[in-house]
Length: 299
Image (cartoon, rainbow, N blue to C red):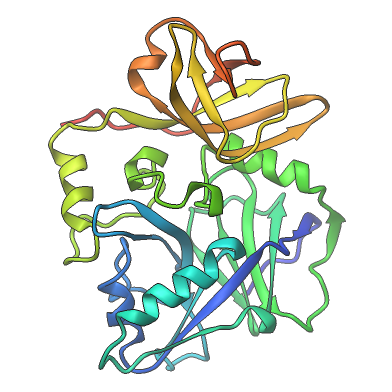
């Protein structure tokens, strides 16, 4: 059961849901996404990515088993709505003879972001009837998905800027329309956050993702910054020593009280000296902020 607490909640109207239905739903997704769906149980969700053959992320999403106990034929996937249609279309191209039907179920569900939830390990899942609540990385953060007709979760209204701020401060970014194909998963610390399994079989881009992990070739990572200017997802970042070539890109951001937290994919070499600026070399200075998790050293 989902524990009933006074929390703050925001209806994430810019999110949607894909339904994968059929006897092969789990095995099909297992062969397409970066995480292990074959071993997915009913007490956990999976953070996962959908990549091109070159290992570039087309979408990032959260998946869990839907339906009632004993019914393993349905998996639901929540993701930003601006990548949903293209993701659904591309996934559908690979279904072929698999017993799996994919559909846009966004009209059936409402997705909420919650702050102030009990501490829980990321990606653990609690159920309350047809609603699920999924613990996210970052203190007191959760994603709640429930039937569209159900009343909104109890709690104070959460300003969108506060949710975006907490997301960026947690060192987490979702692929949006502006960043489709911009990142290999590790460039946004996706494997650190639990979005990649290196023990499962092949999926599109798997060779590139594995090579990035084990050959010490990563030259870019997601870092968190603060600045006094408003940022936008997809905005370029420049280094003071190289004003012509972008050193990174904004992957997630949130602003409040005249300050912004920016989760940005950055060249690691650009962190060794000089300064980073938003939009152009003369733009607002980005001040480094500690990541809330550790990045393992490259092997």
